[in-house]
Image 1 (cartoon, rainbow, N blue to C red):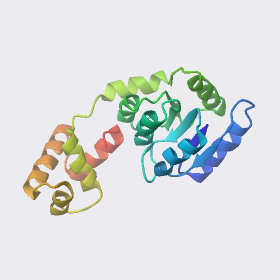
Image 2 (image 1 turned 180 degrees about the horizontal axis):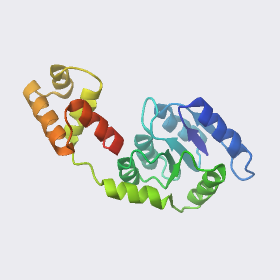
Image 3 (image 1 turned 180 degrees about the vertical axis):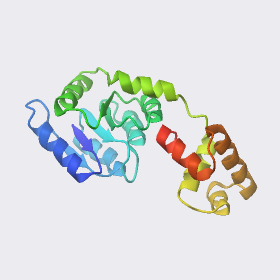
Image 4 (image 1 turned 45 degrees about the vertical axis):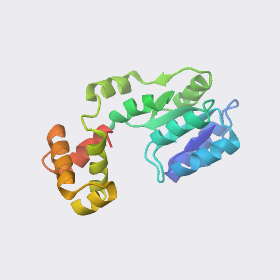
Length: 198
């Protein structure tokens, strides 16, 4: 299996705990999402355990690319309860399992075995929270504009990056703020991130 987790302490603990399992071999450990595909192609793991938030490329984008290039490598996402919208995105990326980060080590090891055997591992509480949150109300372009706004750049710079006029950028921001029920763009970014829509 391959582990991709940007927090050194967590990654090290996962590798140490899983190395104690007789039937699980960690063939690679990474801290960046943009290095996973290349490493997976070289090591050919049966299972990839991915954190969602990693530098370079997030775990959900990595899962989708792994499914396209290495369909035999099944993915498990390490997650928390705070971003339910990510679960819906993960299912679309063909993720086979979700395991909460504070689960016991035995839960992760059992989940890896089940996913390697072709089963799904999804905590019912995570699915319930994801269904309660639902789909993103944002269009793709509204989400793009909010992502750019989250970097702190000005409206005209967002327009330049996305090939939009400043007036169109303001319209997308206004629409996103309204749809999410936010007070302003900062509030909209926070709400959308917490829901896993960005």
